[in-house]
Length: 248
Image 1: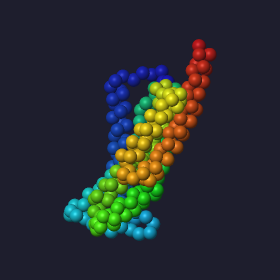
Image 2: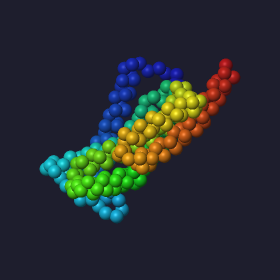
Image 3: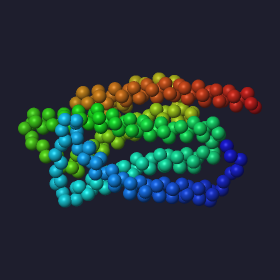
């Protein structure tokens, strides 16, 4: 830790500086995102590799709404590394040197897991969901007219939560290093954890067993990976405590 202690005003000044950096970068990222919005929206209209869906605008403002919404999302994704780094830079003076290196490594890992969750949801789950909805509409004799606003709102509601859910290993590692949870607690509460994961899978998927199983499998794997990561982090915590005790 740093020997120098900052006053509350210095902390607020530092926080203000970090926020300004993030906001400036977000503004730049927002401008950059306009170069990518159109090809991204066109690409995402393909619910499968076989065909592109025909989009309909039921309101005059739907296209511009989706355009700006995706510009915001793209800018947010581009800003995420800067935001995470600024958070780390703000809290790092209160950490030991070893803790700084460990927590800094969380940033690329967190981004990788977020993108992995988004890719899984879009390339694996979303095509199945679209096919399920089309099949159900056909069985009911319903002619589908897909609105661009409804389509992309549903896509974001399905895909983005998976990016957040895939952060589970990082969150578990962080909480274990803080001493708030242990691998023994995770192992003992496995049955309750799987019940919660099953409820989450049921909430974010259509009401059919296959799609829930498609979601439940990676969530279960993530949980088991989290338990394994927690064991490694817990051993490091115990080792650090032993070394600290020997140094006294």
